[in-house]
Image 1 (cartoon, rainbow, N blue to C red):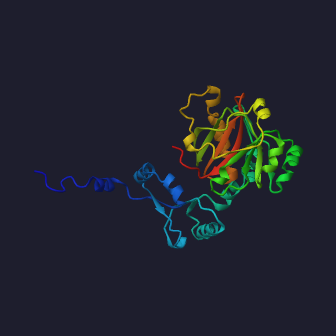
Image 2 (cartoon, rainbow, N blue to C red; image 1 turned 135 degrees about the vertical axis):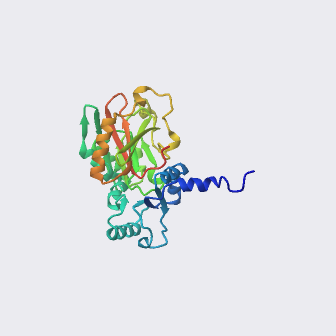
Image 3 (cartoon, rainbow, N blue to C red; image 1 turned 135 degrees about the horizontal axis):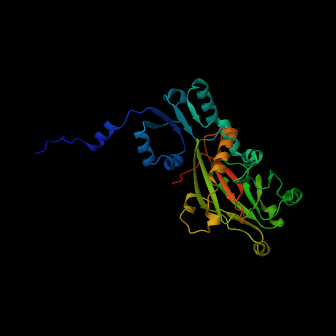
Length: 306
């Protein structure tokens, strides 16, 4: 005969075996971001490692909460930046992922790729640059003339200049002819479209750890497409997790990941220059080449990748 409680509650036993938290991580995220990031698998693994995630109450003073070892955040706005900076000044021992000023440069597509251009990375594994681009802040009617003077080649990818976390800031358009350029809506960045086999590589960086996944992207454009198409074609967010190409049957020349040493060098340089620990890089390989790569976007604290 087994007495009640002989084996106890399994959940209580699991809690008894779990180590006491050694690291308190306060997180300030939107509800959507928290839902995608704080998966049960992650929280379970964290508990086993002695890491506890605690939601920061945005309706209470941050200085009254904690104590935290790490503050993880992805909120925008001057008010939040000031709150976080005041907290950090009074608690300099706390690790803030990542500093608001460092994140800010990724809010603007003109500044986000400047460090990649400055690195001008080239070695035996390949060369990484950025597509030729032009920033337009106003007057849509002047865009065709500015594009001509800048020597950009059609088609052009148009992206909103400011990245503010909304779905709209990640939408893009493809302009095939000069006349359609004046229909675009500044402020925006125009990038020369580089054929890349319809696949891009999302390189996720967490400190010194790198993970690469494939995503489907815009298809290549040939001369017939240019002659048969006119206007501006708008696309919803490209390369989301639902567009995974990791299990697709692709041409090996298109599917092969960029060389690890090349990505490690790029990640190391960008961590140093950007001052960030948690970001991802969108990279394409020019179709028909084995070693010519372009960075087309950098995002802070990316979404769910697996």
